[in-house]
Amino acid sequence: MTSAAEIPDTETVPEEPPGGGEPARVAGGIPEATVARLPVYLRALYTLAERGANTVSSDELAVCAGVNSAKLRKDLSHLGSYGIRGVGYDVEYLVYQVSRALGLTQNWSVVIVGAGNLGRALANYGGFLTRGFQISAILDSDPSLVGRPIGPVTVRHVTELESVITSNSVAIGVIATPAGAAQVVCDRLVAAGVTSILNFAPMVLSVPDGVDVRKVDLSIELQILAFHAQRRFAERFGQESDSVAEA
Amino acid sequence: MTSAAEIPDTETVPEEPPGGGEPARVAGGIPEATVARLPVYLRALYTLAERGANTVSSDELAVCAGVNSAKLRKDLSHLGSYGIRGVGYDVEYLVYQVSRALGLTQNWSVVIVGAGNLGRALANYGGFLTRGFQISAILDSDPSLVGRPIGPVTVRHVTELESVITSNSVAIGVIATPAGAAQVVCDRLVAAGVTSILNFAPMVLSVPDGVDVRKVDLSIELQILAFHAQRRFAERFGQESDSVAEA
DNA sequence: GTGACTTTGTGCATTTGTTCACAAACGACG
DNA sequence: CGTCGTTTGTGAACAAATGCACAAAGTCAC
Image 1 (cartoon, rainbow over the protein chains, first blue to last red):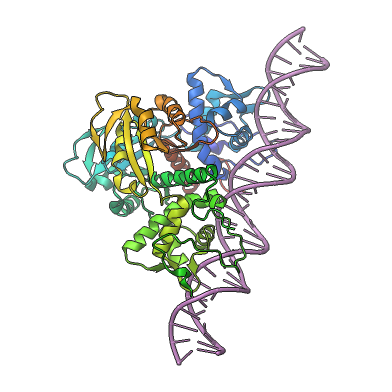
Image 2: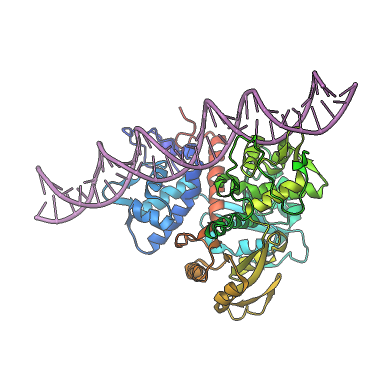
């Protein structure tokens, strides 16, 4: 049973042992916080694999990933019971399971919109994108950039957005345009069928239900750092900076 | 009276009204989740101010920021009681209060290490960095890049890292190097006195206590998107990958 | 085969974050 | 001056995430 879970191009998925205490709420049942950490574990696992490790304990892996080992075990337990007590986890097997859980056993086509500094940086990221992701195109509205080779592709004009998406089955769009253009680009991506968007423009995008947007925002991160830095300094100097703690 | 709503262009700290129920746990007492959202509110406020809005209700601001209005009110309440019932918040005053809470009333010096594609992109981000942040220098180990003008500064050699930090009182370091160099750079930043680090290199940095590291990781974001995309597709095609819906 | 040792997986208590719903506070208006 | 509609600020219920601590389940040495 549970053969419905097989992945077409590769082998069969290990079936759920019936005696398991937990109903194995795989698939959609993985908590958000766990999903956000899985990529970190995956990278740590790749690093360990390169070093020649065959197995790894939750403690070791937790150190590599920079998290608490209990948390790591609980996270992994959401994917299934893939460890061996007294031994640890088989590195290669866990790589496969985490990849599968994240949906990286298939290849995702990505289109980058905006070939400015940031778009170029992303397209050149090569090494980190290539695992499970493929840049189908990078687009810009500036004609003087069109034709310029960047990373694995050459810049094409943004008018080609729709055709690029349909002909390459692009599912993920990356917005690396100025803020002013972001919403328009976003709308076009959505209209063309893209349902996953990574937004680098510093603005809140509005999208219909069923579209997933994640944002990466430099200035937000800096401001969060500033907050903590301020707090540390205030503490250190015991100086209630403005109204740190009025009576 | 009711002068509490006036905008102090100086810095008169609004005193706690005696009838207040809560002891105003400002300063360090702001929850992490709130701190992470304050920059979003701040940007929305700037946008509203540019549009000429004088006051804004929690509902409007919540829409602009893309959050629930109750959450927004609770978040703002951690900074103090700066709204006016029946009216809303004074935009300019709230900008000031949020900025102050985030520590943006002072200027933070930032050093960027790594003048590759990403470092260049960051240095050129200009518009978004300038509010409260100033790029003191951008450094690289490649001699052929040294002297090249990027954004507001020119590239200097990474050997100058320590002197740049001390002479500019740099408190925030941005790591935009390849993963291989990140830990070394990080150690040097920390040794030179930097206690806030923004890491763009795809690896886990280890730092001593008292140093704050935030990471921005492209591939992690993409992988999280892939997870949700996979889940959506599985749902849509009725292909119950394992146990999509509970029970 | 047995016992000692290691490591997983998880129940549970605690902490942190979110959302609802409403009283208190305010301006406006006559 | 009192009433009315609006909006804040927050208590309380709910939900999510964390971390501890330990039984269960395995390996390994002999």
